[in-house]
Image (cartoon, rainbow, N blue to C red):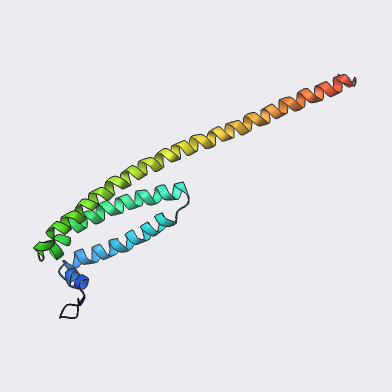
Length: 154
């Protein structure tokens, strides 16, 4: 099967040509932004960075999916010109909703981790402080015992 149209355009290029020029530019720009965000999410090993990326990604996806689902978006390029693909297009739009739900859940989970992490770190600092105080008391008691045993007390 030849992936090129008789005009020399690929099927993707042919579909993109059917988009309103402004929608085409907007969708391309959004795809580039989303690609960068997805790459940052994939490479993140820090909760704070992940939370920041998830927040940016959620905003970007809402805007992007709104653009794609608009009358001059993918409906224009695919739905109106290739009605036999309308079902597949609707499935993609359903995936949009699924992604947004998953993203919201992931953000809540990450927020809970941050809260748990902050609480755990605070508990760790408190434990360290209490251990220092305890060590100081032991040292004081030990020194008092040593000095009083050897008659070195006041």
